[in-house]
Image 1 (cartoon, helix red, strand yellow):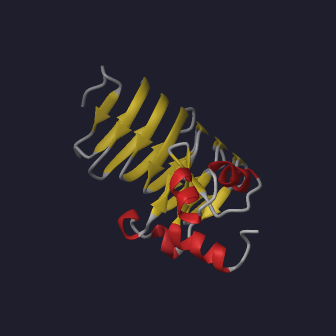
Image 2 (image 1 turned 30 degrees about the vertical axis):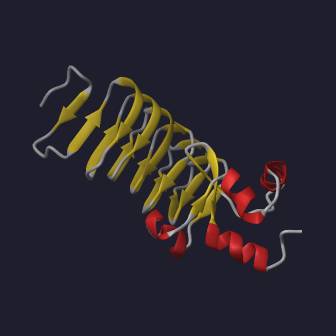
Image 3 (image 1 turned 180 degrees about the horizontal axis):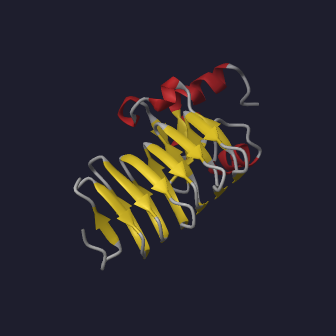
Length: 180
């Protein structure tokens, strides 16, 4: 086991415990059990299980599979599996998840979007549009799209700080005549 870098590895090389102050962009291509016990700032894209320990402070956009939060997180969270906020969790940010468990005492400030089965499908199977592409697709100007977003009229979600639109949801929205 080594500790000088702030990352410790137990016998299983796929388990990481970060207990240092770190910043940057972390991307894990393979599943790993990641535990953050210190401070982290930046962006985090994890496969596998992510645990943010009690006392940890994370200021980051987080994407992951299964996420368990006992510490403080400021930033948007997107989980493909389950998000658990323990009684000591303090979260400020929007969450986009299929399964959410909140223990009594946890604090959450932000919007929560519970994903449908269709939204859980890999993005390769879905057609995702950005603001400009949506404006072109619907033949409206970008200002109109921004007004729809601001007034929460259009089905949208945030990813990496940018508004995104699922084309199938846009088609359903247009068909329901809510576009007015």
